[in-house]
Structures are given as C-alpha cells and as structure tokens.
Length: 118
Image (cartoon, rainbow, N blue to C red; front, side, top):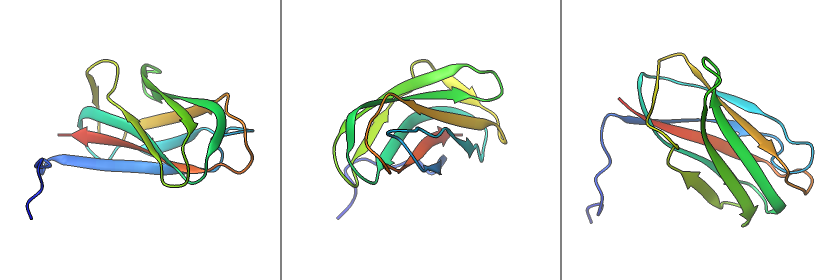
C-alpha cells in the first residue's frame, strides 16, 4: 500500500536524547547534518509530563528562537511537534538547542528532534 503523502528524498531528521523534560530540566543540543530549511521541530516523550513543560528551540550560532513546543500530559511514545515560527535556514554543522522549562514530574525523558529539507 503506498503512502498517502510522499516524503521528499531531500529531507533528513536528526535528534538528541533529553534526560529530563520535567523537574530539573536539562537542555540538549543536536548537530545539524546538512544545510537547508528547518521544516519541523518536536519531542517524543518517554513518560507523561505532569503540568506543562515548555521547550524553547534555538539556533546556537545566532541565538535566534526557532519555535516553542508545549508538552502537556500524554504518555510514553507521545509526540509533540510544530512548524518553526519563521522560515529558518540552517547550515551544516550548526547546532539546534532544545531547552525545557516549567514541567513537573521526575525522570521524564524524551527525544528532541528536527527536520531539515535541503
């Protein structure tokens, strides 16, 4: 059965593991593998966050905020994603920083990810 939406061949996803999205949040960085337009940012959580954790996504090279994710509830395997606020181009070897804040709950980890279309 074919996919209803074709995924472009020139899009790549990259990410990093975040040890704490809830209480005592930990910022993580992810290496950009290719030059292109940032098309999506997101988080796949490993357990439910109590309260609301706000994750701010920025570019390390410029400090510009790309977007903000609101992580509320859900459970293991829940994915929260968003399209960046503005059209953002990244360079190969740049770094995307995911900084969570405001959530509660101990040992809530997850994988932060972004997609770049070249």
